[in-house]
Image (cartoon, rainbow, N blue to C red; front, side, top):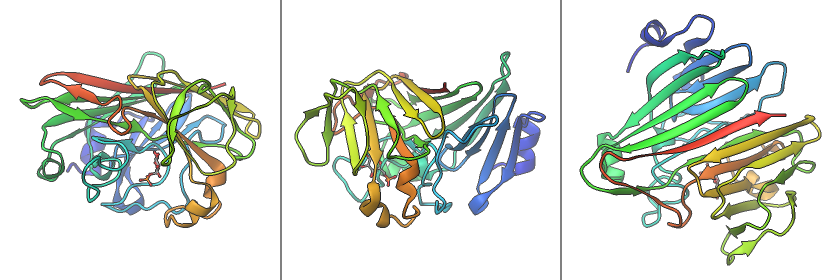
Length: 300
Ligand code: BG6
């Protein structure tokens, strides 16, 4: 692994990209420019914060988040790969795959012509990953920190046989109050929730007033979170994703989670561009092929 000095020498950009040691001894990248400040952790390629200048953070982080190797970080944008949710056949394998539990490498950093900054991190197979999922791959997560936040997760099959995978950008949105926000964009879309049969949302606006864990299928468009308390709308668009998950654990479930404060559920909602649920919309890559899952968040 490269030292902080080596990372700064090779990838640092004056005033825009700085590597430093942070929580749990993990390496963090502080990215800043005229539009926003962001924190990205190499462990998990985990975006911790994206704060437009003078505004509350767009991303929520748990005050009790664990920064420990082998544990997932609660909040921000966990990267789920090569499966989303529980493993389909083996529940001893980690929920949401292993990508969020691995140290990623820095691929490149760049200042763009419009003043935004791009940072790309990569992950490839290792002895540990092959023991869980027997395929060579390269995953590149690109973060573009600018007037809007863009994240692109590109997976390439670098092996000699086809593989199937699913993935997600498990985004925790920072909101003023779960009781007052509305989410637009999932009307007339079918979803699974808990162990129930397929249902369809008929309301134009989704409000959340109980534990919610909806997996909307055949949903390729975006959502808008309207937040009267923060006087903002977050426009979340996506590409390369056919499933959208909307999750809030509500009060009782939150109490069972050791890495979330008891009232944490009141100030976030997860809206996640996802690629497969129970094998529906799973991605197949032949050798040499790539697929990109992309998300863009704009504040209005
Ligand atoms: C969501 C799932 O994407 O992630 C939920 O739909 C799950 O079922 C949630 O509880 C959190 O998962 P984890 O592994 O980060 O606690």
